[in-house]
Image (cartoon, rainbow, N blue to C red):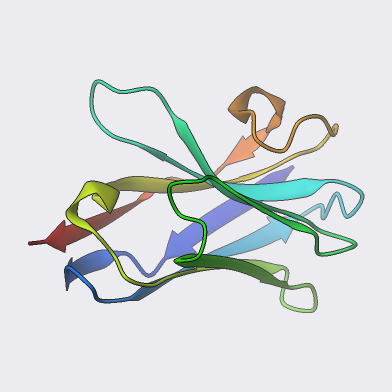
Length: 124
């Protein structure tokens, strides 16, 4: 089992920055990936960024490429999402997730463990 605890969300003005953290406890599943997703009310879940836990390869949605940076600290079993140049359209709940079986990093269906979500609100 894996428990995920997210932190770092909040309210920020457009153009500002936030850093989300996702601390994991339990099994590591180091052969697979972890990711960040977001979902607004009434909308489909959207892939934001992903990282392979062993090699550190990163993947981004086009909508955040160049603005967000995903990283990991394997010693702390923690994943981060540095969000810069935030826009009002980035406002929603962000979730971290862990794969236990592999598969497409961009598909939420391949993730087995999810955090509780953290709200990010960007004011214009």
